Image (cartoon, rainbow, N blue to C red):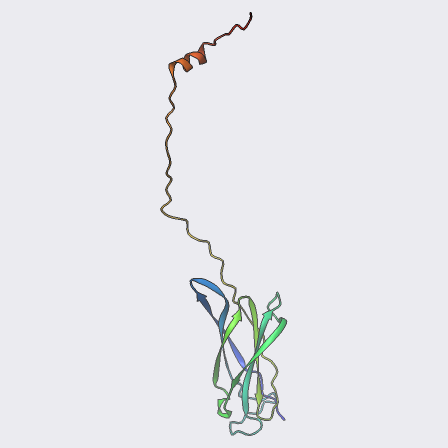
Length: 170
């Protein structure tokens, strides 16, 4: 049984941030696109007649990336894109809703009607972390308050410059 070659994933993983009441939500939508294979790994053409070697689907695996963005760092999920046998060489697209806001890795592989799987495509990494933006400065800042006037009596001024001596002796 021939294995189909892995699908070509265009590095087009689009970010659509979900916002609620003006705040950034904790998830995004990823649009994964690619082109289905036309050849099996032995170089033979993938048939489009519905036989066991015809394509059945594309399986997109995704999850949090390792720090280098070259592999998964934990649990993954798989989304299946059904194909028709005639879809060999045709583009495919799938929106994956609710992707966490962090560095995510994606890869894909084909399966054929005979239940044979291709190798995985190379990893494609995309950072869905919302950018931290510097806010603008506040406008319309005012200060209100009372101004105190300093009133100095002439006696106090005189006392300040002419010390007064008291004699408490008997």
